[in-house]
Length: 368
Image (cartoon, rainbow, N blue to C red):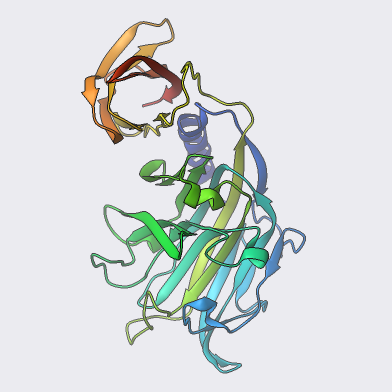
């Protein structure tokens, strides 16, 4: 995206200060990106989906490959929804998918949203075996969806949704949502991302983690396979309902970039002598907030110790001790320490079998 010198300086500062905290515990490398700096979409990387079938959700738009519905300008890719009669539909828009698939990684996009009743933008993924097994058996990862309109408990211009869909003797789904502090998501660009591996999917916006789902069950094997990316701007449908008199057209979904990172070296020290499903998650400290949340999963009742140490191995915080039940746990650390590299260490023992030991250590960059 093209900026003035001042905004470019701010953008670089954000990259230098935010990304280390997001990527430090894993050895992520950029493996694919589209910075949308050309004059037209790269059709070697993207395919337009041209149809008026309603996306399986009774949506009201016809998806086209016309320049009226998508364009590249000033370093961003814009998908535009129009109110017009076109091939039997009352609205037009665009939907594209990548010609490349990935298995695991951090997938992110910097997006400026549309707004209004009946407006449904999405940044999401489907399993690459879609054509052979169908949906939902292929699996679906919704990185960002927004149901436009006046904010309510179930949606609005200020709320983003992250969801998984899969098959387990029928369609199953689960996910989270996040509401920004003020205004609409359309007021500014926001960074939407997932971190995805063989055990879980984590959702976030602007370096804030807002949800994590454990995907280790056999029913969720779809999420241990390659997925491709889809971007689209739908109008109407089962979830958002139809536009009304308050909805303004045209509406635009704008992408500054889409990036895929993958972990080249595992960032976990696992000293367990038993097969286990313990997880110590990579956390995402916000450099503009002096606290950070550390999450971990216990597959059974365990005696645990969760501590923070500095580079010299000196303890700086004792966050949790003692017996805890199975399930997900989260501890808030008021990081009242100088900026720098720190390690967080989870040590567990089966509450009923002391020789079943497990240790995980991860590092994080704390910048204030």
